[in-house]
Length: 508
Image (cartoon, rainbow, N blue to C red; front, side):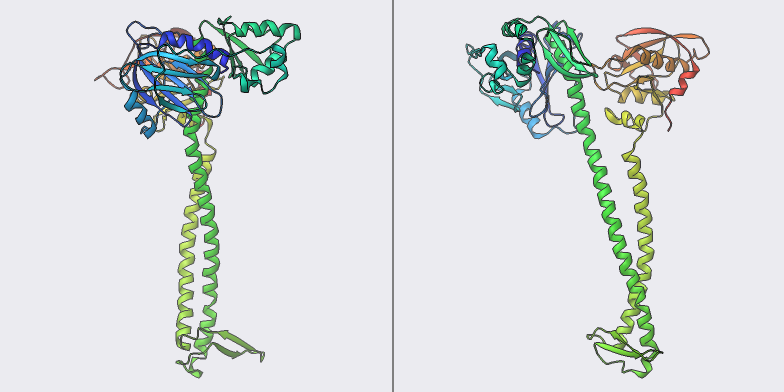
């Protein structure tokens, strides 16, 4: 997020947040911070209609900085880390009084009511508690050097942080006669609009101006009515992707560690097997001693024994001089027996490791349907058919009433719910990576068709299917499994009941 956009964003935040009460602070993964705020009565935040609690998400440290308000929060750890608990201790229950921005550095200070510190959000470091700025404190406005200086000095950002390297390169790429116009618009304290650039569905940048000229190949620009909505569209895929990616990483690391441990165990087994076979080979030496024992002094302690072979040559047999000849023979027989027992144990252990290898291969190459089910809100163990729509979205259809109930309980609030209208049927959940992800019409119709196929309307040509967010579907307390009420319907889809949709089911 560029500082020139951050400037207009914090003005809207300054209008939306005062009076909001701090509920909780979350640290879902390193580098992501979430502040949950309960809004004053009748306060409506653009992009979060009907929400009493909103979540201020911010990223700090390396990576693309984001700051946005959303009605949804990311998945949270089972236990809050100590840093989150410390912030809660000082901030929970206090209300936002005012915001003090240092927009060139993209730094924002939240001042709260009551005694206690303020909270400083800085993209370069973990949020810190600090003394609240004086009410009349106003950060100095930055200077704006001449456009020629900006485009010719790659290090201009050090003295003028609002002129980031990315912004400087963008200005330098403009025709000379058009640079000054855009530069003047950027300096203005008002925005032309709120524009998100993205490529392949991935957010690239936010701007308060329209850039002239032909857009880069594959880059689309989307306009939003408010900076808050544009910031949310930019930040949602980054924040939710960051959290889900970090949460999958420990599982991947654990699998890799198990692979390394298995490889080390197999290598050790090979070495042990060679040692056991060497023990078994010593039985021939014990047999030779036993064959000549009647000719030897059994109690003698000597380092070597010499035997005459059939061809007249001699073979030296190394003994343990601490043992008698009889003791050496017994020791060799004992080692041979130990080798036999060891080979049996090694074979069993190798079989176990080979079974573990198959399990690990399954974990390394999880089918797309299973990985997507577990990515955000695990639905493992739910009796549901798994489908993949033509656009690649995951859809799950309960096999029975209990499964329908489990799907609703475990799905994310921003996933989509489908159910045939005005009659019995099963639930279908269409999964989304984050609340802002758009679902193509074709996928919506396919999910609706899957719901119709497992309903009383299965034999009809067409059916009406309800569509709602999972967060707006409530399980009836005390009701039968799968019984729900819907607080807000997105729409009712008229869909064809087409058995061919069953071909979208993924193989188990």
